[in-house]
Image 1 (tube, rainbow, N blue to C red):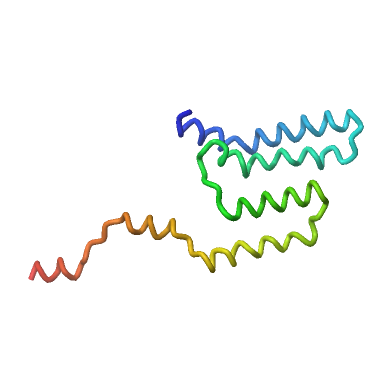
Image 2: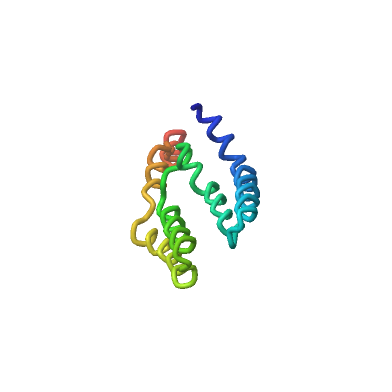
Length: 121
């Protein structure tokens, strides 16, 4: 699949999630499931995970934390004590600085302006 098509699919992910939310919620409610739209809200995880599935984004530490939080909250109803997991994100990046930015800066060519000025004199 071409990268431009993958990016376009990711850009409409919100609308896909909304569509899934209403369809799943409607049919679960019709089937008599309690908290039908609560269970249907799982469809909004597409916004987070679809770019990773399609290969547009790489898995990052914040995505892992969000996935753990959603599993604990949805499956075990442990929303309250586990929101503190989000404090791990800045701690992680303080301990392990983002090396991706360093690699980006390494690829850029820098011009020594002082050296160029000396040659002109």
